[in-house]
Length: 231
Image (cartoon, rainbow, N blue to C red; front, top):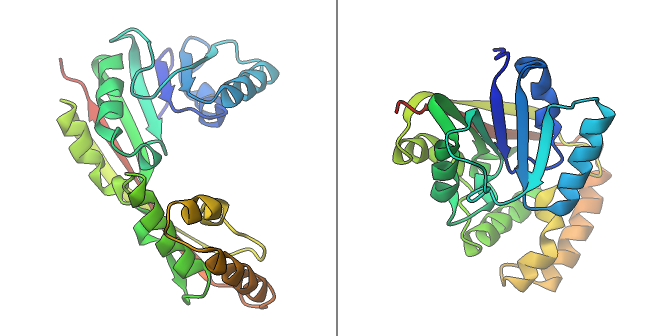
């Protein structure tokens, strides 16, 4: 729904793609503040905001759990696809988001449960690579199923949970697709959850899969939750 005039903060905003989508909801009277720890993402987001003529978008460097922004200065705080790769800091991030909204304000969380990803039919190397990627994430302290914990994180931050729901998306795997797990293959070797032999085998299996005329379906699940600050 639209929220004309609302002040919104996006913690872990990346290149501000979501903020540009929110422009039509807050209108010219609202403000959009983005925080990201990656200077390159911040600069890219600033450039895109200028190109879009969005003078009410402001981006700054900072941490999702410690942005440096004043408390109780926003109507809405958004945390999207951040908790899943900030192992050990999930509650600190949601606590900080809760501190940034005014009484009556809301915190919107969106994240995944990557353990629910399914391939139909299961095929190598994608299924095995996904399992190793989950093991790698756990070694790093991340929770691949953090999407299921969103209501608990909101309640622990002192917020009243107003909504919690999930959705599944389905698509046919495009030939040539590798995905985040493949991008992390070297890091997985360094973490001890994969070997160089594994990488060579997976590369061969990907080439064989790409050559098949029929590609598998990929099914993934995401979860959203809304918490309201009452005092």
